[in-house]
Image (cartoon, rainbow, N blue to C red; front, side):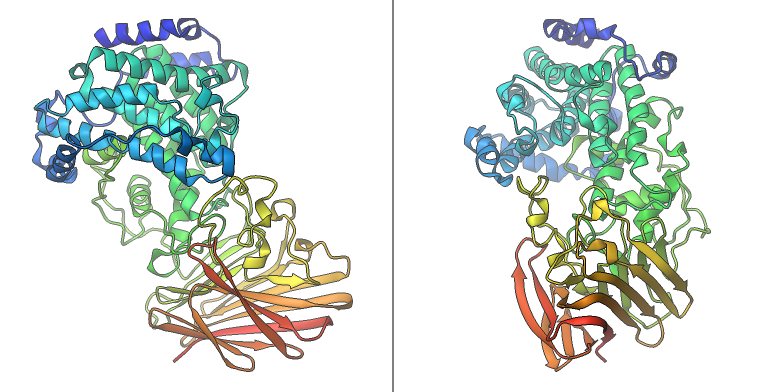
Length: 626
């Protein structure tokens, strides 16, 4: 009751009481009423409040949370100076376009919340409470909870126009979880201020969007912003709002607007944002699914959507050797589908993929995820199902976008893996139609470079494709008559043919539409992966112009490379090596260039035909060095 009075008094001061009875045109009033009946009387978060000592003294839970380590960390913080708010760091983005300074400053400050709150819950002696109250007052007084890159007008910073972004939604959910865990142990003044700040910066702006359909674009976005922000905002509401009806509104909104996120996936489950954003976006979708499942007593389950199984299987099907995914879109080289998410999906959906047995690790560092994982959840009573029809085999083909992953047979000594993409460009697109990558053992030796390493103001602007790692220059695709590829989000390359057998996989792609060059009549790329012997990859380009034109192919690499013959280039890394034999009508010139903003920096090896051609076939054969 005390928390109810506290929250309502803060809300009234901000004019929120009128919003409690406002209508939400896109939400079903009967569904809100039904959800309200499912929710508990009191607000709640993941795990248990610290007053439930039987939970927080459970040796298994404390060990999973690395209790001794986190208490030791928090002890050191008691004598350390809290990082100061830095206007200059926050405003760096608005002045120079650099994101790192402001994001690092916010991270240094928010990073104090987890260890201090977790240590107090585990120890329960009250010695961390003074510092936590100090933190809450500091956070309530911060000029912005929003990342500087998402506050271009500085409306959040100036306090003139709040909207919700990836960071503010997450931070609100962490603060709300802290309030749930510590409750009345916290000072009334600190709690009042942080609840008022959450209302002003998060809940009120979202309510306004629900009423008017304006602002907070992510509500109807079909990419990671939707799931991330909905997860943060909804978990914050469930843990901090005492009014059951108000919580039901936010849950109904999560149900309704969350469908936009799922709409961003093809029916085959392919994530055009790349594997890193599958981890981020679908990972937040999973966390929200678990919260709603728990708070509704199992009655609300977003995994009931028929599309979920395919989306979950993306985490398995995109993998090459060592669980590494091809780094398409804004994905860093070496990225993998997060092991926690694939295990969670394997258990809760009964996918039956071997090698992903329980238990799941505890994701430390965030109050919500740590409590979700350490305390009982929907995986706690699940056991891995037997091998099923969805067990990942020697290939994955996402036919809606023409992305192919080729692997050797499970019992083979062949260590060669490869991938190619015909399309699949949506949010976080690169101009990379026909891009491919070749992997030997655990080493990505040549092809798709991954990146960018860092975002800047230009990354998501009209200048995006000026970057050599985002336009086609840095990808393993041709430069046609001196021209790079066009914006890949605006074209539809065609897969002409596929032929998949136990011994070989072949895909043929018409890449002609990827170039705005009048003289180009045809550009066909054929990709063949062989599982025989030590394996091989052949990439063959057939080009036709109406007059002789220049032709150049790019081979980006993070590996060491050397030209070992007139038409041979060798790539090596980590004890693995492959040789590329290159066949062209005449000779070619080799030129290399370092590209810094890939992830990590890569070398682009350009192979330019010595003479213009009207028609030609260029063939590259990649084979392991024996």
